[in-house]
Image 1 (tube, rainbow, N blue to C red):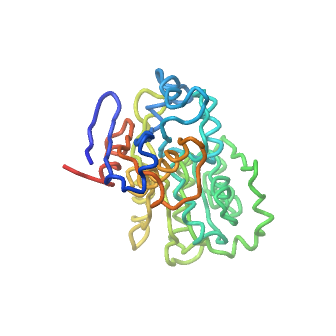
Image 2 (cartoon, rainbow, N blue to C red; image 1 turned 30 degrees about the vertical axis):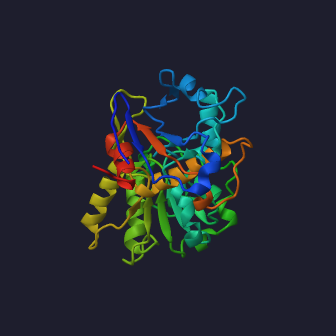
Image 3 (cartoon, helix red, strand yellow; image 1 turned 90 degrees about the vertical axis):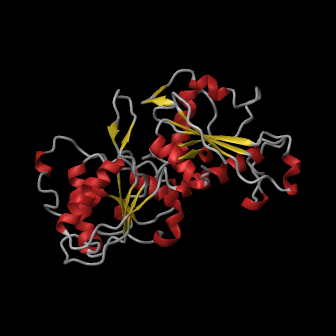
Length: 334
């Protein structure tokens, strides 16, 4: 497997082991797939960059069927993959499936067996609680709403001039799941930073309250509940000409404060690029898409070992420290 970097965008490709004889039936198919970053590569804010829509249309047959398997691999998020796929389809003029969208928080769905019925808190821009609810978590509440149940939890709330819109559109009212008294007496079992936080001051305060108390603000110190970040980008390219501070910057701020007020260092798990798991998952999905690009154009329920092999996997992004480093960590050859 080899990796190369080309300008103006980062391009990395790997060559997995050769396909076995059992894959001969797909030998005439395209044996490569593409993973695109979104921000700074395909889109600049809400506008397509350059001729990206035209380039993407070349990955489809004239009939609209997928010709080259590709997906979007981004550390961004804040909305369900189905909605992001719809938005990308509208902006780019091609049909994007939810399975072709891997966001920073997509791996959180793998934690469902652990926290499905537990009280968890989700924070970030967009609709973080709706995202987690869409994955199947049954007792999830946004950090903003959680904070509203505690009197004087946010000491500067009176000075804030903005309002927080409660999430809806498919998310069951949290009051139907747990009463105020239950919430004030039950510990939060895990906290999820789903997307870039909006109100850093409130998020740092409330997360420190939860994490230093063992899951219930105001209680004495206890064992820190698990903390998960969807990504760890220090900076990212948005619509503004220079890069913006990302979730990694927020993690540094939270960690610095937490370690200053607590006797044990902050424990956390970060997903998103460059986590090798993210690229391995992307490869599995691209293999499914490769199978779907065959004559029947339909994804079959098969195990990973039964899926066709990819000779080459391209990662196209704008951040060598995230996009290229992650690909290299999966299969690195000097």
